[in-house]
Length: 282
Length: 319
Image (cartoon, rainbow over all chains, first blue to last red; front, side, top):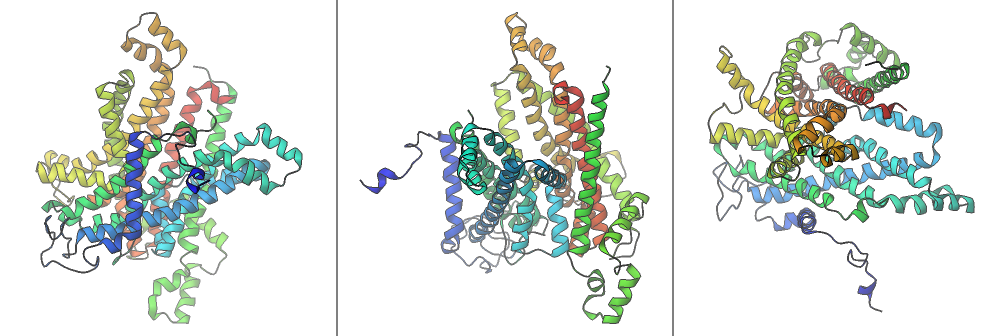
């Protein structure tokens, strides 16, 4: 028996992705790879002024033109992928891990614990996301760990609410009752009975939350309170070069295109997920 | 229409929840701006602070008192309109806010007046002719606007209207507003950008609300009886979709709160959001608190209105 027979590819599990979803997935994977190897692909050091002219146009030497200091935009976009994708991914994983864990606990425990936690986290949903970021950054200053923690805190309540609703539904099913009657412990119930059955929708939700986080992160960087110079994510690249807009410089256009390509492709991918993954109840 | 006592009880409950939420939110804002940054007195005095000066300022500002007392007195200040002094230029925060708030509300008002009719018309039309070219174009446009950051919509608007077409000034609000034409030109860009952001949400939600009613059996029955598509949607589906639509309108208007922060910054529009972003860069905490509370209150107000409207229009939610 060779190993390849046992690898569960989507086709073997009976899922099939349509073409729009595949294109979305391809773009997501492309940016994920760039986030890892981008700095080695960059033709010039991202922080170095390589051109005497600022806001240079596209040329054979500088594929995406140069920025307001004469730095190579292609190199900076490749490097920016690491910040945008990396920070957003770290925050979304934190937010969803926390939210899903709390949601499952609240869904299974129920009672006053559930009510109290739900009310409290709902209250945090009453703060607009960009504003939350502004206030925290104003208070403690901006650094990458602070950004990750803030973005995770903003999107944890939503993830909690989503996971709790799913967990409450699964919790009433017969196999959970059977497990409880067998005398299984709390941790077993949550990890072995509930979690596998809400995994699909939770992953789809994670994708959507990733898009929101990319948008808020870019917004914060655009306002100048996200990733700080000399580093720059895509939002910060747009901010740096916004003056070049009236000159029609490609320095503004390419980082924007990068953000849009990432968010739109995640949306496409999630929208076209097979129903079996998105919603197990059907 | 007569509403039963339980309805008003439920509405009262929603308002109560909103009040509690506001309390928690105000505590979060206070906590983040007063307790997280460390000692405010040290921040104010900077690096040259002597321990005596810090201690003196702490007593003068009441920082020696327990945090909960400071929170309560801050809360009382909010209610009585005493918002404290700005750290940076020693002006009453309420004086700085007065004119700015009017500007922001004017911007939001103009956007609402433009957005609501256009978005409702487009949303209902694309639900009525579902799957048509109109529906597809609207869908693609709204999804694109929703999946890109607000500043990109703003950037694109500048690129199209100011750089390529040359109709409007690019990034300036500092122009003299002396005539009607000048005023229109100054407002045009922020209004266009915000309208796109808010309308995209509104169209999508309206379309979804109408389609949900169109899918019900009684509307299908109307179609089987021989009613035209137009009559089916406008006569049978729409009256029942009014509640969800009003809910959608209030919900999508809450996107104004996030959008306005970006748009005011991009276009240098003298509103509350621009004031707040500037205050963040100077770490002017009392000003940030007040601006944050203004945004939280307006956001909460809009989502509570959406909740109450949904409750009043849908008897099934009252059980």
